[in-house]
Image (cartoon, rainbow over all chains, first blue to last red):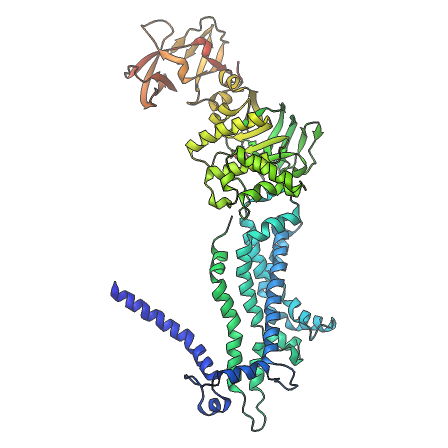
Length: 280
Length: 350
Ligand SMILES: Nc1ncnc2c1ncn2[C@@H]1O[C@H](COP(=O)(O)OP(=O)(O)OP(=O)(O)O)[C@@H](O)[C@H]1O
Ligand SMILES: [Mg+2]
């Protein structure tokens, strides 16, 4: 038994190594200066330039127009991540509420219509979506960045399944207690969905945070840059004899990783709870 | 407090399912009515129509003087206790009790007063700040009751409120609900499939079968004079023995045996004879009117024993004092005034 434990741990450690090594390398590399990285490639040792790199990355105006700082990119990414997550949750909860609790005509058809949009991710409809947004004059706005992606079949589906598992008697008790549709939603369903909301928030936040294609299309002003785009941008400034700021690119990558990781670590117990058990 | 009048009420579900068929019940103010019947007989449907959770296909339901067919559940002045309690899981006991009052805009002080009163009656004081999941089944049941009584409604509706409790607690809660109802004198409609619950709690029992009323009466009326073979077999434990028999010239013939009726009327022709296990006794001596019964097996119940056997070809259960002597065949007498005769076709009492 002792032996299997050792083997178990070796396997787990190996897994950890595979997962963590690239992150560690990225972090270590980000603490060297750009020249070092250019000459010697990736680093696995501490380079001693941590404060410089990160300070510069967060505050130095970068890009062609010199309008955007790392801090600004963090903010943009947050706006996108949170806007996404909150918008999707609100929208998909309301959609699921309508589908489950209101017997309107063709409700099932509507549900399946929403569901089939799973087969049509953004990439498939990106040109028409872009077209609509241009016509509405929403290029280079947060609204244009967020709104077209809010409709969420996944979220609607999860909330639908959850609402279906809420006992009917709860609705009936609430009706007898004088709660109308709005009150029932706010007073009963939303609090009951708490863990579910947390779980979906995490998924959607990370999804929004990592958006690349859509922001690239929708915004061409650098003040709308997100972290994910910023990384790419740093490497693109290779003009003449200038060395790309590799260290800053890695620093940005680390920064881009941090919030999703933190959110998952902090909320993971909630997350698991939300997906597996329920409070009914 | 109010009368509840159910007049020719029917309920059809989509696809021609007739769950309730022309039911009429006049429930007096303060009366405890129990709807009882086998699974699927439409008890819950009827109750839910009174609550307003189900639409009425035909007929009228009145609470007090008001026809409530089209009235929202919250406006009907009723409170309901559900089988699974349906407590709001994320609210504390106090919030659960107060929610309905809050929605009605009852002043805070009044809510506090009523919640305090209800929790005192139901001995829930120390649990007021707990969530439902931190309570035992019995305590949850009480909270569900509490949620009903804080409302001070015109009528309580119960849908099998005790069936999730263990047998012992069920007996205890049975008594408590009954006492509480007596004290509050609130008109109550109580649904159960347990005939014992019906017998012990009801002022009047309504026996339902296949969506229609078989009989309405006090527990004793229903027990002593069942109006149909169905009621006879449903009410009472062990179930009443129902035996195919014939009437021949004022005597009752079962297979090749004959029961003399000592003046009780017996029509000629085929009959269903109903006799309760405790309305038979061992015959003393070998006289006229005794019938012979072959014994299959015996159930010891402690105070008595239940003897299962056959009278000619008909199954029969007989309750005897626990010391009574047994052999493979018993000679028994039937009390002619405790026999029930039913029409074998319609099942109605003759
Ligand atoms: N929503 C519905 N649609 C169609 N038929 C229904 C519906 N609800 C109930 N029924 C039918 O109506 C009949 C009566 O149902 P009801 O729930 O009133 O039975 P019950 O007497 O309460 O039984 P139980 O003791 O099992 O609770 C049943 O045959 C049932 O199948
Ligand atoms: Mg039922």
